[in-house]
Every structure is written in structure tokens, then in C-alpha cells.
Length: 143
Image (tube, rainbow, N blue to C red; front, side, top):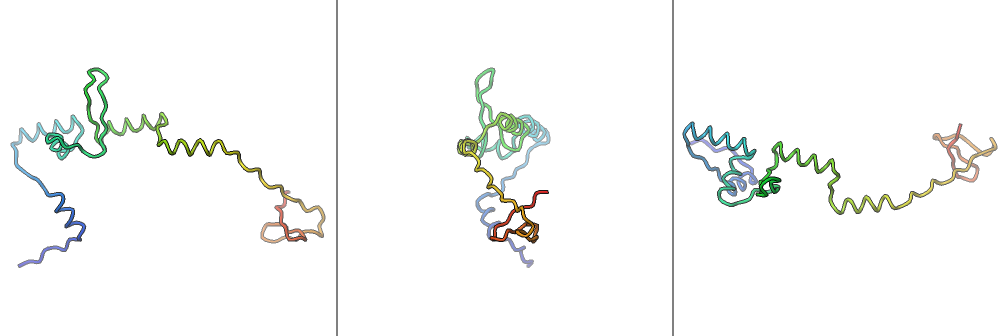
């Protein structure tokens, strides 16, 4: 008797919580199914969930501009990417992110500290690209 391949515990839990479903259909029905999935830009699992009234995670629903009925846009589809780009281009963002940006913009920047320049050669010595004054303060040399 052959030993079964070791599966990590996380994989075992995943398979228990997400069992495989398979069945056979005619070639004609298979082609129709593939066409419908491509037309609607959804996966087979999403079609089954929809037929059972179970919503897929992270879907977006929009009303049709003509009839008003809702249609669903699923992730990882071209329509989803186009909508996301439009929203991004128009500046859609989290409310929290907008508030933080406003706060940062309204806070004035602190003025840069004034630098003391050494005027007398006896006051300065050169070390690590800084000029040190006799009292221990340092300044950058402006040439």
C-alpha cells in the first residue's frame, strides 16, 4: 500500500472547508457555459453561487444607466479594472486618508534652523564634512 503525500494542516483545513464539485455535461452545454461565463466575466463558482442566491465576496453592483436594473461586476475582470481606474483617476479615497491629507496640508512647515557660519579660520576645524566651531557647535561650509 502506497503512502499518501504529506499535506500541511492548513491545506487539509482548506480542502475540508472548500470541497471540490465536479460533474459531466455534453460538449454543446460546455461550450454554451464557457460563452456565458466569458460574456458575463465571472467564474463558474460565481455562477453557481449566483444561481443559489449566494453573493460572491467583493463584488460591485451598479444600476444600469438605461433600464435601472442592477448588474454585478466581479473582481479580476476587465470591467472591474476599468471602474477602479476611473475611480482612482477621479480621486476616490478613504475618508480617513482625505482627512489626514488635509491636516498635513494645513500644518505649516517648521522653519529651517539658522546656521552659524564660521568667519575666522582659527575658530573652525574640518571633520566628517562638517565644520566645527570652537564652542562645539557645527555648521556646514557654504562655498
